[in-house]
Image (cartoon, rainbow, N blue to C red; front, side, top):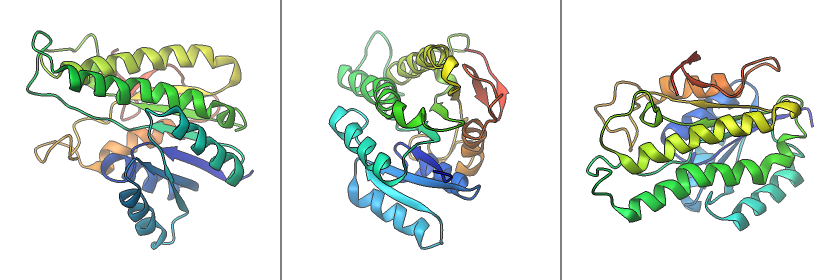
Length: 233
């Protein structure tokens, strides 16, 4: 029970995998998750070959059965969860507008970016409550900021705005438990979604997520941050 355990959703590549890497380098056991079993196991094996303490779990954030199975495995193997990073995300829909949406993309973005994070947080909450200092980090985006919103990417932006609202509500509901819940914008990162022209590498993007994952017991909750600094909702 003294081991610190962190689970990152959608973490077999890119920003999620780098977040796991940085967390395990600071003393956590990292749980890599993915819907693609072969890719997830390959990512875990690569980190394990470097002597890093990681394991792999199948996890489909849209499936309550999958979340329940992950809960059972974590409870058996670790007994608790100290950090949950809701990183799984999909569809930066540049070609769409709010007046001409692709409903398939909208539904998938809401199911994974927003509802998936909500389902995982609730499903793993009993394990987080067993930690002495638990943190939930919702990987959001400035595209979900109501103050900074612009036209375009309606599915992605609306799903991240909803995730921001969820962050505030979870933080309020969990205040008495001591579990901190924050949203983090990693910035424009060079990932498959961000593209090669993005201004930041995955190491820079992940560092702000790791900062929020490692907050002290008296750290902030219910905030929206980039690089450890508050940004506008």
